[in-house]
Length: 475
Image (cartoon, helix red, strand yellow):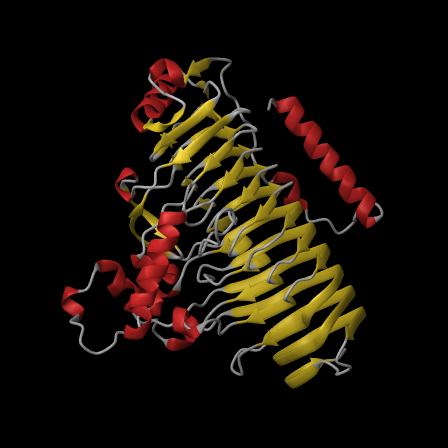
């Protein structure tokens, strides 16, 4: 899509916001004007992947041919790499600066189902830096590049899902749940790592082996109009939709995500390794999006070590998502999550409308080496995961300055579940113009200085919201 068309769509989105909130918001943060691609300048040149040997028969492995087309395009000063209609089987390919990988209508990139077709690279996965298979499509250390088109990128992830479940079945009796996700190596579908001015637009992603779109250590990235369909032929573990990880000035809009973990997720590193890097995710705008099945419409965490701030999510809808608004971390994770604005959110048939827990999933979150292992012979990433956070207080996460308004939720199982820490309560949460109808109201524990204005919770069981160990929290 050219520059004019992209901005027409962006203006249409702004007009939708105007209509939905009743006018221009005088409190609109200034920074929201500067998120996303600043300028995309792709040369008017086309390179045909088929001319470099790509065959769209769904069986020929096209990794080398597609990479040759990308390299040739970059060598000529950039342009657009295109395909004849067909199904193109491929392993990892690496996009370069000034190149637009265009997956047009009638074109499918099919991810290889052999792990050896994804070379290992140094990257961050689930908050920890380690060697891990490259993604299907990689944009690493580049600028002014794009992945676009109305075609499909299908990760064909089921063999990787099956391998994960088999390893988890083996590891859990050994008390190794905390390392399963790091030992079961699975390729992401699209990785943007260490980049500037990158556009991802209109693509349909299917059946990711692991996370679908991972934006890591990057700035000025736009994700616009994508569709994620990861629940085809099964429910893949950890098939997040979009993960924004220690990145800044990011725009995500007009996305429709059906996955089997968090739909839109903000991350910034895990435990000792995340605190070592200490890079926040900040200046992020997510708007005009839909989540279907998945773990969370909008999730902050659980990897919070680098902190998160200056984030706005607005005009979002959830249909059948496990959790709507979700904050999660752990006692060894650390980080400050603050200045978060969640506005104009509609939810139907979700599990929990609002969930906040800084002690999430202990069997996964806390690394402990069982007896019978020699620390000296452990893989490097095991030792990183086992590195203690010292002093322990550094690992206590903070959630504060959260603003949630214009929320309408029906048919939820629970309205609110907020379970803070005695030593660091959940502080300064502000709810306004909120209506939630649920089976039960839920609970708030270890919280301080919460405000509620025009908030209605209707619980089918007739019981009120339970509040314990709270200070200045009144509904």
